[in-house]
Structure formats: C-alpha cells, structure tokens
Length: 262
Ligand code: OOG
Ligand code: MG
Image 1 (cartoon, rainbow, N blue to C red):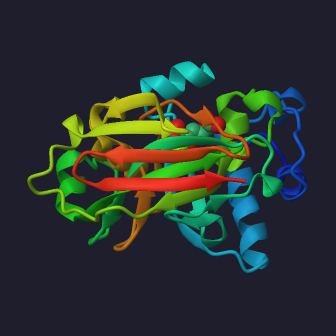
Image 2 (cartoon, rainbow, N blue to C red):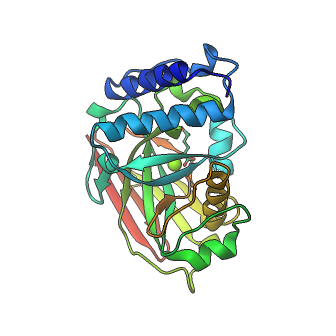
C-alpha cells in the first residue's frame, strides 16, 4: 500500500459524495499517481463500508472489462471487479431514473448464481459450472463518477468499477445443456439493434469471468459463497441512454429484459 489509511478514507468519501451529489470528478490517480492496486481496492472497500453504514446491502459482485468490446471502448486491458447493492436493483420492466445519475450507459451481461461456495486459487471454468445453480440475463447501468468516463484501471477500481444500477429477470436456466459461448445477445434501443454479442465475448466463456473473480478474491483471502450473484461483465459495448429511451435486451434461451429511461 502506498497511501495512508487517512488518504484511503478521504478518497472513498470523495467518490461516495460525487455519486450522491451526481457530480463528475477527475480521476483520482491524477492527484495520487503513486496509488497501487491494493490502495485502489481499499478505496472501493471503504466506499462499501460507508454505504453499509447507511443501510445499503451488498447484493453481489460484478466483473468488469472482461470483453474486448469493453476493453477497447475504455482503452484498458485488464479485468476488474466491484460490488452491486440492493439499492441499485431495478426490476425488469422498470425505470432508469437519470435524475439520480451522471451519464448512465447500459450494457448486456450474463449473471451466475452459485449453489456452492467457490474459492481460488486454481478456480477454472469446470469448477464454476459445477458450482453454478443457474444463469440469468442481466443489464448493468454503469455511471462512472469520472468526467467523460475517462479513467485508468486503478481509478475505476476505486470508483467501484462505475457500478450504479442493475436489472435482472428473464429465465433462470441451469447451465446443463446451455451453450454459454454461443449464446446470442441482441441489445436494442428505441426498437433499433445497437449491438450484438455472444457469450464468448466475455473472456471466451462467461464462466471464465467467475473463475477469474474467485482467483482475484482468493488473493485477498475471500471466496464466493453459496448463493452469490455474479455479473460477468458487459458482453456488448456500453450504450449511453437519455430520458425517453427504451431498452430491450434479448437473450437466446434466457428471455429478455426491458427498461425505460426517464
Ligand atoms: C467500467 C466498468 C466496466 C463491464 O461490465 O465491463 C463494466 C466502465 O466501463 O466504466 O462494468
Ligand atoms: Mg458491467
């Protein structure tokens, strides 16, 4: 760790306040170029503690920057992880209220729910599939607290990987007999197809994203518990939304998700 506990706490307050006041800030590595990876995740954890102190519950994990579409879009080259909260959940068919957001974008994801604990190191696709209860479609609404979504990896980790809202529903489906690599996804905005993807867009196989997450958590002495909900990362690019937009994401075999933006 390169930063002091006081600086970690101060950066957490800075980003947490930016989110609550929906204010853009500059990426924090500008002022703290010596910040290391542990510092970045420590800021994220301190934000989580601040939210928990306000009664916001942790609902699951999210992997991010797991697809070439996203890495290319954001100009970074390594996956990251963050957390999602109960306060961020929007029901399928519900409303994304931009009044509480800065510059929201939506991205189509596949989520896993575990039936058994999963821990690294050495976690792999086979272990993930054996421990999976079912997969469900999910849409993430990301909303970087950084101006124009401009960040580097450490800054975005500290900012809880741009997490803001999430939608899930569709058809919960066991992985047996499901070809997750070839599972097609169509993202529509206002009735027009904006992007398409297949499950393989996410690290070659979306279960690989869960394995990577288990291995990253293992380095911190943590694991994924039975029942954990994990978003595997945007398979499509992230698409900006504005009031008046409608978004539909259709998943092969898993149903679809719908939302309205106000
Ligand atoms: C970072 C979050 C990335 C994903 O699914 O790739 C992410 C960002 O692009 O702002 O959630
Ligand atoms: Mg995402």
